[in-house]
Structures are given as structure tokens and as C-alpha cells.
Amino acid sequence: MEKFAKSFSSKPLAWPRGKQWALAGVVGSGNLEVLIERNSKTTDQMECIVESSIPGYKSSWLAALGDFAANYPSGGTKVTIHDQGADPIVVTFRLRQAYDHLIKP
Amino acid sequence: MSSLFHEQTARQRIASIVDSFTEFLPPPERVMSPYLPQLDIPVSFDDGLVIGRAKIGGKPVYLAAQVGQFVGGSVGEVHGAKLTGILKAAARDGIPCVLIVESGGVRLHEGSSGEIAISEAMRAVFECRAKRVPTIAVIGSDIGAYGGMGILTTCCDFRIMTEHGRLGISGPIVIEKWMGKKAYDSSNRALVWKTSGGKTKFLFGDADVLAEDDAASVSAAISKLLAKSSPLTLKSIKARQQELEKRLKAFGKTSDPDVIWKAHGLASIAEASLANAKEFAALAKKK
Image 1 (spheres, chains in turn red, brown):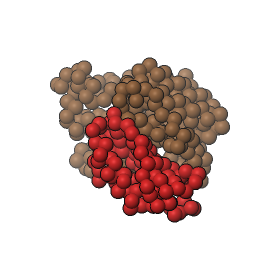
Image 2: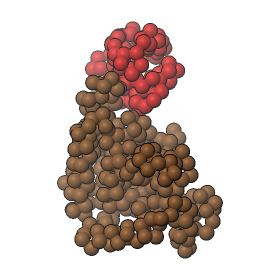
Image 3: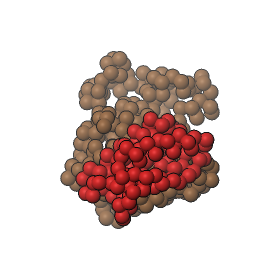
């Protein structure tokens, strides 16, 4: 298992009316689940906690998450990931799915 | 979102069959397996079971849906406790309980805790049945209902299956390992499908309804059963026993599932294989 937590700089989340949390994906082979939650305050940090069954890919994770934080205003959210071997494109896709669910009222 | 029921995830299935849904122990509460991390296996926020209160066809139900992709939809301690809880709530409130089953049975990683959890859930099913609270199981994917979940499913009042659904105790590979490839070839998909699949289970009456592989058909089938319950009495159990003895006598020696289909009035196996649920039900009635 690879487990780590890291915060990424991101513009504050701009949609105040959406849901408190959103979930995308399932923990299955080649797949992952992403839970994105709003913190009580909007900040300029996206907190991330990652648990992956495949060790050794931390730099890829940091790149994918950093990229997402830079492209989508996610400041003031907490992202928790349970992964079972998803590739980076699936990770990015699930992050966007969860984000999309979160900001829609 | 896919409209084929067997391709959907548990949460998609719920969203596509209900009018409204309120989840109990939602993902942010993080009620997860304490065992899997010790084995270096990733956990899931819902431990593979989504439970809550819903409305289907305007009527209130308690609803549980298993996540087949997560450790085979298996029943661990937390998963089983959630399942037992939702069934007990149904018995307490007199509200029907609908289970969307997709599971290989007990989660072996959690050993006795999983075994106990599933037997507690079975006891809760019988608590519902004693109070005439309908329990309805839906099996709509090829992960199906096997092992302990196969037993629990058959304990319910009613079963709705699609042709993709499979129901059994031991899975095909398990049977092959014990009985030999001559007795049961698990790589023969047609054989597996015709012995444990929804269409055959419907012919036998093990599945009460054969639904199409879409949410609207499954939802309509659930709605129709919500007001009914199947009484569990000494008489009904004896009748069931006789039925099973009759089945064993009629088909116990056959190794060809087509014989069973033909005995149920299906003249053309090819036609019946390709028929949708509605057409199949009509063909099966013609005997």
C-alpha cells in the first residue's frame, strides 16, 4: 500500500450552492473512488489523502493531483482517494466527475 | 450514464430506480472495514454496500445495493452490519425492504465476522417475513448472488432477475474444482448461463419475475411486489420441499440444460435464448 497526504495550492472553490460532498468511481480493479468534501471555510488549499494498493507511483499521483488543483478551483476542499490500480487518465477523469457532482446544485 | 442495468454501479442503479433516496452512513462518515487495511487491501467508504430510505413508484422502501466491483460485493463485518440494520429497520417500521444483490457471499478476508454478519442478516430477513413485511431481492448482473448471499436471496419473499443475473450457492469454478471438469465445465459459458442464469431460474420459479435489463423494467417489477408478501408457513415449506423433490426426480440425471428448457415448454432453444424477458415469459407459458 502507498499512503500519503499532501495539500496543493488552488484557487478557492467558487460554487457556494452545490453539495457538501460528492463521490465518483468504485474501488475495483483498475478503478478508484474519489470523495470530495467541502471544508467549513474556503481557502486556497486542496487537501488530498491517497491510499493506493499499488506502491511506487507517488510522483505520478502528485503530478495528477497538482495538475487538477491548478486547473480546477478547489481551494477549501478535501479529496480522499481509495485506489486499486487506476491509471493517471482514470484518476483525472474521476476527479473531474466528483468535482462536477460537487458544484452542481 | 449507461441504461443497461447490469453495467451500472450500485449508486447508479439506485439513482435510476428510485423517486428519492436518503443514504444512511454516507461516504463522509467513513464507516469502513477494519480488517482490509491489515491485509494491504484498499477499503471503500461504504464497504461495498449502499443503504438508505427510498421511494419507488411513490411508495416508501428500505433499500440496499451491493457494489460488486469492490472485493466481489462480499459481505464483511461492516457490510453485513449495514445489511442487517436495514432489514431490521424494515421489520420494525413495517416498510418493504429491497436488496439489489451483486455478491459472491461472505468476505473470506474477514472470516468468522463475515459469516456471523450474513447469518444475522438472514435472521433479520425472517424477522421481516414473520411480520409479513415484503423482502425483495433483485439480481441483475453476472456477479450474481452466490454463497451466503445466494442463500440470503432465496430466504427473501421474492426474487426479481434479469437474464444477466445468476443465482447459486457454489460458483461455477468452485463446482468444477470439487466435481471435476466432466461434471461441470466452468469455461462453458452457455452451460453456466443455462444452469444458474435468470431465464432458467425463472422457469423453475426460483425467480418470481424476469425483468428486462433496464432500470425502468426493474423499478416497475419492484413496484408491483411492494404490496405483497409470501407467507412462510409449515404448509408452504412442505409444498416447496415437494417441488424440489419433483425437480430432482425430473432433472437429477440430466447433464443437458436444454432438456430442462424443453420440459418447460420451450420448443425452440434458439428462439428462447434470444427472446427478451417479456417474450420469454410468454414462450414459457405456452407449454
